[in-house]
Structures are given as C-alpha cells and as structure tokens.
Amino acid sequence: MTNAPTASTATAPSPMPQRPNGEAPAAPRPAHERTHAFATRAVHVGAEPEFSKSGGVATALDLSTTYKQTRVGVHSGFEYSRSSNPTRLALERSLASLEGGDVRLSDNLKNEGIDEFNGAWEGGPAGVAFSSGSAATATVIQAIVGHGGHMVSVGDVYGGTSRYQTKVAGPLQDAGCTYVDMSYSTKADGGKVRTEEEQDQVILDRVEQAIRPETKLIWAESPTNPMLSLVPIKLIAQLAKKHGVYLVIDNTFASPYLQQPLSLGADVVVASSTKYLGGHSDVVGGLVVTPIPVLLTRIRFFQNAHGAVPSPFDSMLLLRSIKTLPVRLREHSRNGLAVARWLEEVGIPNGLVRDVRYPGLKRKQESPAQRRERHLAWDQLSADAKKWLAREGYERASEGGFPDGGMVSFHINSPAPASQTESKTAETFLESLEVFTLAESLGGVESLCELPLKMTHGGVDPARRTELGIDGELIRLSCGIEDIDDLLHDLQQAFQKAL
Ligand SMILES: *Cc1c(COP(=O)(O)O)cnc(C)c1O
Figure 1 (tube, rainbow, N blue to C red):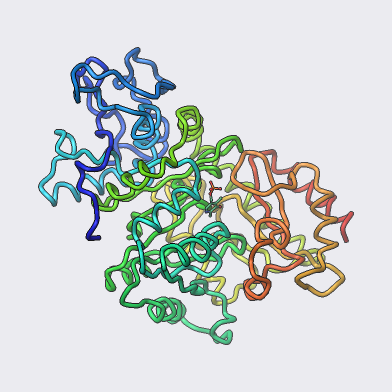
Figure 2: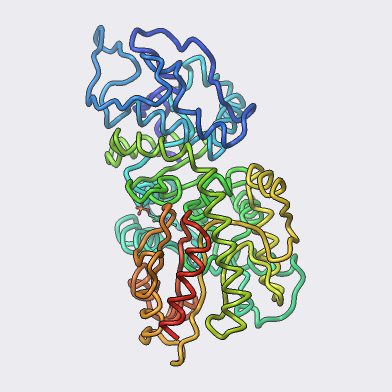
C-alpha cells in the first residue's frame, strides 16, 4: 500500500457534519453501535434531527452541486457534490453503522492516536456509497490489488465480479485471479464422511494452496449465487491474517441484518444496495464498508477520481428503504423458509423437485456437508438476527430449520435428463407462475423467479456451469413479502402446468 493517499489528500467529509452556520451539532449521535441495536440504528442513523437545519426527522434531499465558501477555503464541510454531499453522507453514516464499521474504525483510529470526532480524522465514516455494486467492486479491486497483484476468489462468484476480475483487472491491471471452490460440496473430496473440522480443513487447504507471494486479497460471497452455498468467513479471515492479505466479503445476499462480515473478521464489506438494502426494485446502488483507515481513504480517493457516486435522490431513497430493512428481512426469511420447507416436504416426495437449497433448511436426511452448512448458517447470523430468531422460538437445531433470508434454489424434475441446453420444463414452470414475476435481480418486496442458465448466469462458461450444478433444471426464487399462502398456491399451480 505504498501509494496510499494520506487522509488530507483524499477529499472526504468529516464524520460529524457541521451545520451551515458552522456550529457543531448540539447533541451527540442518538443511536450508536455501542448503545443501540440494529433496528434502532436502521431507523435513526443518518436521520438525526440534530444534523438538519429545520430539525426534520427525515433526511433532507440536498440537490446542490456546489456549496458557498465564506472565505477562500472556508466551507461547511461540503465543497462539490461529487466529492461529498449531505444526503449521501447521511447514507454513508447509516451503511457504516449497520455493517458494524463505525465502532471498529473508531477503535482503529484510537490505536493510531487519532480522535475521530475532534476533527483530526478527515476520512469520513467507515462506509462509502457507490452508484452501483459493480462500481464498488471495481474500486475495491483497483485500490487493493493495484497493478501486478493477485486475488483468490470464491468459484461461484457474482457474474459481474468475475467479469471484472478476468476481463478488466486481468488485462488492464495485469492482475491474476485464482478461483477456488470454497463450498462444502462433497463432490470435491469424493463424498467421504468427515467431521466438521475435517470439512473446514478441506476448504482452508484449497484456499491456502491458491495464495501466492503477490496475493493481495481473498474475495468471497456467502451465501453464493445461485447455489446458496456457504463460506466459513471466520476461518478464512484467520487464514487471510496469517498471510497478510485482505478478506473482502460481498454481503449482498445476506444483507447486514442477517450477517455482518466485519464481526466475523473480514476487512472489507462490499454489497449491491440494489437488492435487499433498496428492497423495492427502484434504486441501483452499492457500498463499501471498512474500518481500516488506510483502505478507507484510498477507496474514497479512487471514488472521487472515478466519480461513481450515487445521486442525492438515490441516496434518499436508500435511506428511506433502510429504515424497514429488519422488518422486511424477517418477512423475506419467514417466507423463504416456508417455501423451502414446502419444496422439501411436498415437492420432493411427489417427484416435483430435487436438491432444495436454502441455508437454514433442516432436511429429513442430511449429508455431512448439508449439516455443516446449516450449522454455519446459524453461526454466521448477526447477533440481532439470532436475538430475533430466539424470540420466535428458533435455535440452531430446530426441526425443519430456521428462517435465513428470502433466496431459495432447486432443480425441477423434468422428464428429459439435466443438460446445458434443454430447459423446456423449467421454462413452462417459470412462465406459469403468476405471483412470482419472471425477472433478474432479487431482494425486492415482490417475489421474483428466474432460470440462471439463460438469465443471470448465461455468460458463465458452460463447463463451469456444469461443475456448479447450473443447468436447464435449476430455478432460483427470490421470495418477497407477499402472503405465504399465495406464494405456495402459485408454486403448486405452476408445477401442475409444467409436470
Ligand atoms: C447484483 C449484485 C452485484 C452487482 O451490483 P449492481 O448494483 O447490479 O452493480 C454484486 N454482487 C452480487 C452478489 C449481486 O447480487
């Protein structure tokens, strides 16, 4: 990190915005990670009336592109809206708090002898909001891997991420990328029954073998897309520390309500806020959260140089959406588990489907790998999500499983053998659904369904798809927050038409 900009060379807002008249806010932050739970922070951080000129309880939409300076170089903390904007700053404070970046950044700065809140730290909150998840991904890979570096990436990584890794970072940054199967699939080790520790070791060995002297980062997602496999974040974080490389987790599928990778040892969280954070299928956005000061200033510096910033209007929509993130995720998760259980308990015995994939699902007959994944699914849940599940009477060993997000994948049992070209039965099923909308993307309040083979994963190499289990029978559902009876009835009638 030799070229890392210092805090003062990066144009970045201060974490405590000044009022336009230059006064510091009257009261301390009303909601903070050390004192308030996730759902409280989701509602309040970024919407503090103390930061608003009018005292409004909703964050103001500030469309100004430039800000008056009272004397040359003397300003309110805002100069030009690409570099910083009050509505975007409110969103960044919210994202940083929800991913657990605030407290960690504060602690890291104290260790360096810097007091974040007396103005000595100019690097802003621990979160940076981007115009899309892809812009966040590209910026992190540029800022950390640089020229001539190398990364180790989870095999079934988001398609746009592998496109950037191989088709942009490869040729333009001379950056290598090694893909590693970080899942517990028993295929890779011949299906031998192993203890959980041995299963973990298989994954750690695969990752460790891929690390080279020039490796700068390990990139992983958990759950993965579309197979919803889990990656042991804590163990990989320990391995990353041992080798002096950064661990980056794409937290799009879980959302910070269900999983906070920084608390599991990750160094950087990246996500597309287009999905669960936005939640209403009307904003494209992305985020990076890291408590490591040198990375944070570097990422902000790169963002200001590229200009991939979200508009104030998109920032406001996201702030509004985030207030209901916990409420929505609980409902997505209840519906997700109910759909997965229906597929498992009705779909499989009736020959409609096989291989139902849902992180929290407890099957009647579990392979050692499935059992390990379910245990990991519980262990990687955030403290707030575990508290909610305990209140609802769930635990790690609950019969039938526990709610854990809205994403469900399965293979439909078509009469033709599974292949990379034949998908007639799956297509009839998808086109017969009436409540589930046939569309790419996920995480919105409306239920969506898709055929990864020809839609989200159409660009993936067929050999890689076969290896991952993406064929003409694989269907991915994003369960929304509609009434569960309507969702189950919809699936039932579509199976009748397709099979
Ligand atoms: C959608 C998505 C992205 C890319 O985000 P955009 O906002 O579409 O650019 C990255 N990672 C995952 C896991 C995603 O689902």
